Image (cartoon, rainbow, N blue to C red):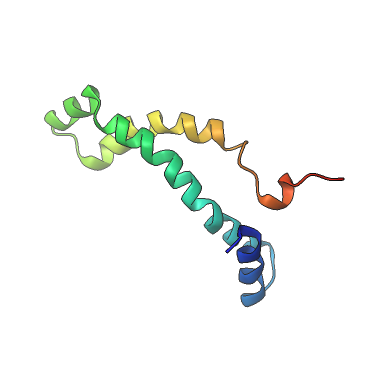
Length: 93
């Protein structure tokens, strides 16, 4: 289903409003950002500093917060402005 149609369907099913629209747009673009984060996260997971943290006994949540997320944030931040909702990226004639 095209993203705009899905967002409109959500607005039609639930009460029309800004919160429903934001939820719809958020749900539409979640898979895009999940794919964007997955590659760098798998790469960082194999780095030596993560292995050293595991050996030191650091828990999984702390490794995620201190090592993985800061290294994955750069691709997300740099690609966020390039991914716009379809309604705002269409050309005007």
